[in-house]
Length: 359
Image 1 (cartoon, helix red, strand yellow):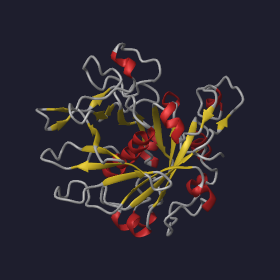
Image 2: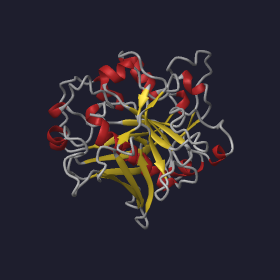
Image 3: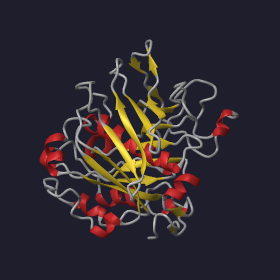
Image 4: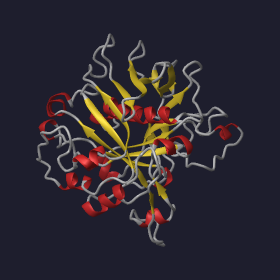
């Protein structure tokens, strides 16, 4: 692998006619796969699928059995295919043989995972984002027994070299109050920074008079200015979350879901994935997996963080999550890295415990 600040790592695979199966042949239908470095975030990446690899097995891996959570990053959202089987070789095929150009490993104290992890958004954690393909040793955690207890902050299956290789960003938070307990102070947040400690930005959970409508504020790192607001559409005079229906087919959003639209902080209007969407209703550069999230004429392809349908096995049995992140047009690499941290905070604060049941 190359250094994250230099060249891109390119992967190739042999041609295969069967591109509907989730195997290494999926890569050949896409072409070259490049590492998701900061350069690529700024120049080419418009959207990502952030896919959890850690198996939570029907909530069995809770408390003392809760492991670190790991994720992979996939630029080709339209190639994401829901997992419909629990056999290990097929799980590995989906996670490690799709168009994956980056991965994330978690570092969290055992006591935080064991005792604080059951309180939404409160636990202290640290997510380290890497460029390049995930190491094969990441599969060993999934092969471990369900009753395995991880005492270390990091997965014991990852080597020190793997955890320090090609770091693009670090997303971390300290222990805070759980979501929905008290609005006075210590709300969940996620700080995003470079491997050298350079501040990229910070995402904060906002608890206000409409506490039943979850919302997040995204701040820039240099001047700590409010840059984006993540908030779903509302109804009933703004007091209720407005869900969306129609998931957009295979690999798309859930049939009933709550897209967190990335909005202008002043007007609260959704920002677009591509400026060309202002002039056309057919944006060719992406598959809108959260189809028709808003009915306004200029928001045919809004930027957003949306829960993806990850397949019956992942949803019901393995409790693996997947998100679609569509970045706003003209977002800087640092802002995109911060929005990846925002997606992780959405999961930690809202869905890690409820599994998208909005409990």
